[in-house]
Length: 251
Image (cartoon, rainbow, N blue to C red; front, side):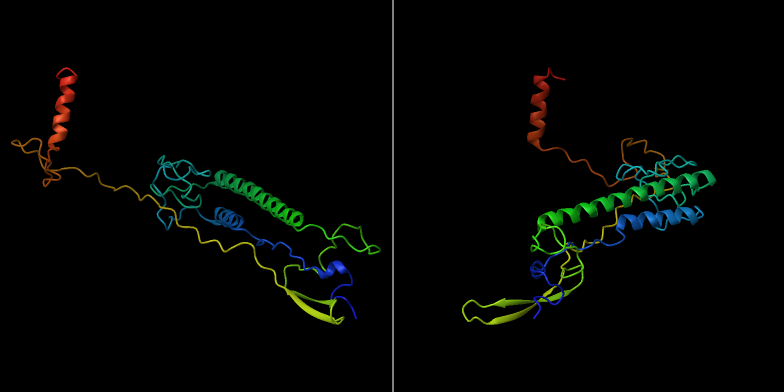
């Protein structure tokens, strides 16, 4: 009777747990690929459906693609994507030279991101192997003693696997066959969707000012907000201010 249904070594009886493989395409890579496609094929005259952002890079980082509009000089933050026109003057950021430079820049960013994620993935796999440890193989078995057999026989490779273990009860002297199922569990919880960043709307096109002439009787009246009233400070605050002025020499 075989010891195990999928292998013949004692080390195969120990269920191993391989690190779950990361998605083939991470969110950052997908975003860069989408951006590259838009820069390559967009006309550059489309208006941003979200209205762009007018924070002047005060609330968000400065755009690494088009930091300044070539037409009106508007400072652009990283929420203003390069394949859209300027949110203020509708100037296109594309010509033959600029489009080629943007494509080369995004390709370089994509290459670096892919290399970074591949390095992180390999580091995670190596750390998982070190944490799992190596089970020594039986003498006479193929391979080097002290190393683990490669995944493929008797190990979990990311899919559900089952195996049977033959055990001998020392009291009853009876043989028992137990079945085990190894179901890999993802170690990465589902991350919540990122929140949409706050966008600063465009300033009003018309300047707000008081059009009527000032009141000659009440020159200090606020004509724009006539209902405003002056509220004197508390009495204690006036006393403190008066004492402070006296200590300063009466000024």
